[in-house]
Length: 390
Image 1 (tube, rainbow, N blue to C red):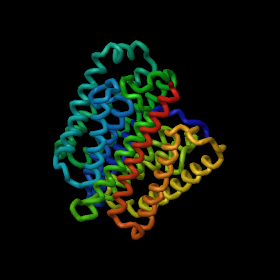
Image 2: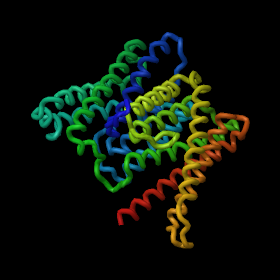
Image 3: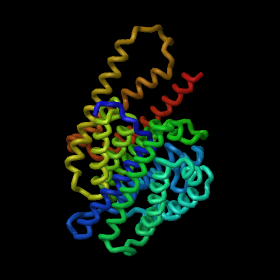
Image 4: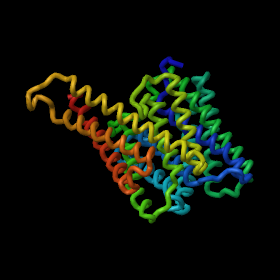
């Protein structure tokens, strides 16, 4: 459990997607029997965010692999933003989420299946290689074929009976997890195949996740203002669930946790999968986990902000005094940004842990500021990387 884990980012995204479909399929049985509530927009928004993460970080879209260009990156951020809003605000876009997901699943799955069969570097090459690549053919064919059916079920829910639709969703989730396992085996043998597609976007998957988290916080803060004024409905379970899934992706991909970075061991992978499961359930089944996740997220933000604040201040104090002007301005900006970010994290955690401490409108402003500071931190990190390369 304490050994280093080797999970490429592409495999991490597939694990989250497979878990989402397995949990959704399992939940549909008691939902159909009237034993559980069901929040459709929470599931749809989460799926859109997963599609967006693949697009932003890897250049892999529901319609095929593309260069990581700036227009593609902007489209991925827009899809992630739409998914976040769809999750948070019930029924704000009507049937639009179904239409978008239908397009991603059905035409997307069909095009991917067609590309696999016709591209010279896909099916013909995989058949020639043999071995694990034959399992890759089976996994891709199952996922792409079932995607077409899932899209049809999203658009027309009466196409199958509820138990049969739940079974299809379960099988689809199992197929995605099988494909994730096959790709992990292949990426271990051919590590270069796991690299993101080249393009004019230089952000690493971890930096891209930081951007999505910044957009998440910014949108959440902005939406909480009209929500607290009684102008919009709000799904607290989906908000907490999506946040937990974001935490999980960062833990699985890089070992980054709300309490700080850790070695990416299999124990960390297990914790990330647990976070993902809790988040997925909270997105799909409203109100069930809200009290527990509110306390958990609040505590993680308070502890994480306090630990990071202490480390930032100690590292500053331990550095030898330098003459005025000797420290590059960008490093001073980095220190101030980290300081502000940690303080905002503590305030956000306090607002969740002790709800009456900070008014709801102020919490919205804190979250929007948190998102803005995260995006500014990403800008500073990009500048530092360019300076280092130079």
